[in-house]
Image (cartoon, rainbow, N blue to C red; front, top):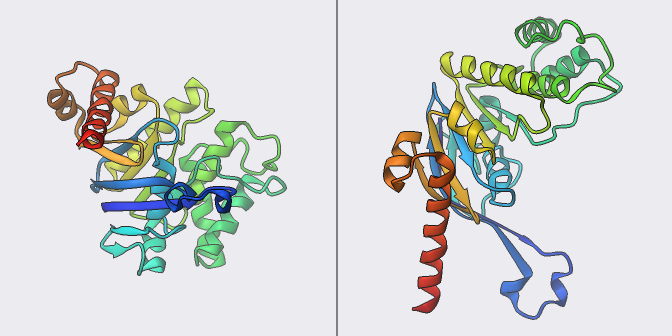
Length: 262
């Protein structure tokens, strides 16, 4: 289970020292992100490129610290219980690199060892994932020259190798063809059925609508709405997710304009 409360994070602009105003020296990538993701369901973090999705996931994955706010993964605080969070979490970042000179099997086995599995269990777990993710045809080929779909399967296997309860995927279908996307969706659904907490980010409306039990809409570094698909449609008075997304983001913009005019 993931619980995020008012997460914030900013980054210093390149060449910031040349800017006079201190407020102009920083980019506020995440301004106020609050949402929850439950076990046994798929939660989508939906927003356009640059909305703050990847930065949010990196904070939850303990790769960067929040400047303010808090978050827990399966009850462990991402800022203070880093090792416990990493033991419970499987994270597949956007465009996750795999070692091109290693085979798919070696990539997964190596990551299993990094996660603390002994040699015997690493070998066994690697074999299980190769079969589960249907990787037998390329498991013992070097990763150099793999298709995007094959790379994604290897990266997903690495994220699952230590049997984490919570799984986060950053735009996992980016660059995949139709059949590879369908296969990955089925894998994600099966993981949720097994009781895992699944959180994935996407800017593709149709993908989120088809796959997610729960949706958090993020724009300009702020989660503006979270609910089931039906709940979001009812709340916005729209008939499809794209129109609901536009309605929610425009409401935020209008509130910002009203605030500036006060």
